[in-house]
Amino acid sequence: MQVSRHQDFYLGLPNLLDEVTGNMDLRLVHSPDGINWQREVTDTPFIATTPGAWDCGSIGFPATGNPIQVGDELLFYYGATNMTHNYKFMSDEKVLRMRLGLATVKRGRLVGYHAGEAEGQLLTRPFLLDKPHLLLNADAANGEVRAALLQANGAPIPGYNGDACKPVRVDGLDIPLSWKGKGLGDLVGTRVRLRLSARNAALYAIQTASRI
Image (cartoon, rainbow, N blue to C red; front, side, top):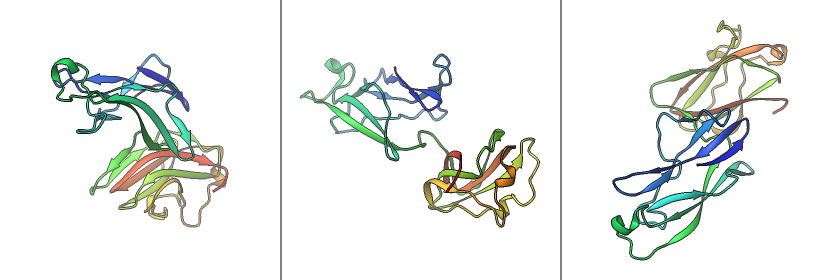
């Protein structure tokens, strides 16, 4: 497994072999300390083999130092081949092809919470509001996201409920959250929670900011 330090955690790209077909892809795992590792619940391939393409057989060689951030994109270089892992017995390919590939992910979007037509809600852990702005990384171009700001114990903060929140209906990496007639300056230095309500949208990250 290729391991890299990414922000405040460790990112791993292990190979997963299908012993029946011989295909091998890359999965995504993460760890806070490099010892205890966790796979995502859906356990879908992070980089999958592509039927009929040069990488249709095995993806097994992620480059050292993944990912590389360039602007708002994370770049993942990997090696792959059209042959399955046990290609001598199970591959229909006649000519070996082995190349270097590139997969890209937008900044902050390695994993996310996805809501469909039925509204979903996400309650964050308590966190320190250390700056006067909150930015949301989300794709709500075909739906909507609203946020309610709560005290650390979950009690509502007057004026910061979901109805007072300006609805988010765009796709963006740094979308400002705002409430009608309310700033966050007076709450800086306190511990708060966010309750996010989403419909037909994907939620990826929240961060504080000094300015927008």
